[in-house]
Each structure stands twice: as structure tokens, then as C-alpha cells.
Length: 147
Image (cartoon, rainbow, N blue to C red; front, side):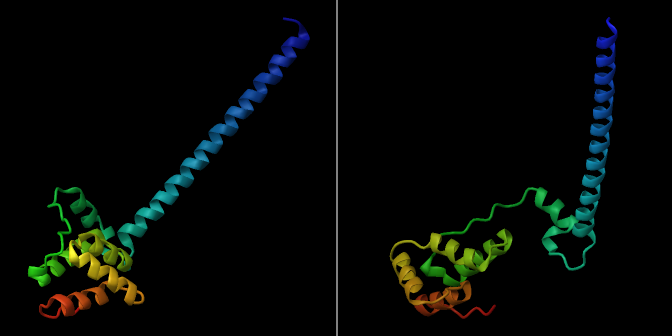
């Protein structure tokens, strides 16, 4: 090989080695950083006293176990208290926000009940699940549930 060509190959090999070392070093730093962040996240979920109970190790393991599927039933005017109790269990299991509770309850309304609910939404400012529950009890009867 001519001398100039040999020099060029040597320079290219040196650059490749440098690039390989730099890449290896970057990957090692990235992996260390990733492992550190993972450890922080794990510590947060396992050791933080103020965490939500749904993030405990026991809860995570329990979540992976087969459980009965919980569904929100259609609104039954015959058993208002039973429906409200079932709805609240559904909301709790799914971790529903206040806004989502109202939306999910609306999905379970059928027949003339949906028309009543639409009127309630139009006349009530900032409808919450508590207000909706109170209105359901006033409209369809049943004992008062306090939460």
C-alpha cells in the first residue's frame, strides 16, 4: 500500500477507535443514568409514606391477579341506592375523577332518565357526582347517602 494510503487508513482507524470509545462511554453513562432514575422511581413507589395506596407493592401484585370485572350497570330507577352503591364501587376501582364520575353516570342513563339528566346538566352549574347523586335521590327517591 502506498505511504499516503497507509496514513489515511491509520487516521481513519484512529477516528473509528475514538468514535467507538466515545460511543461506549456515552452508552455506559446513559445506562447508569437510566438505572439511577429507575432506582429513584422504585424508591418513590415503595418507600414514600405519602403515596397513594394504589401504588403499593401489594396493590400492584393484587392488580395482576385475576379479579371480577366491575361494570357500571344501566341506571335502575327501581333500586336507586343499589345503583349508586354499585356506581361508587365502579368509580373507586377505576380511580375515576369527579368529572369522569358524572360522564360515566351519564352513559348509564337510559330512556327518559337521559332527558332528565340533560336538563340537570343545563340547569346545574359545575355538576359534580355529589350534586348528581343528591338530584337522583330527590327525583327518584331512596334513602339519603352521605359521603
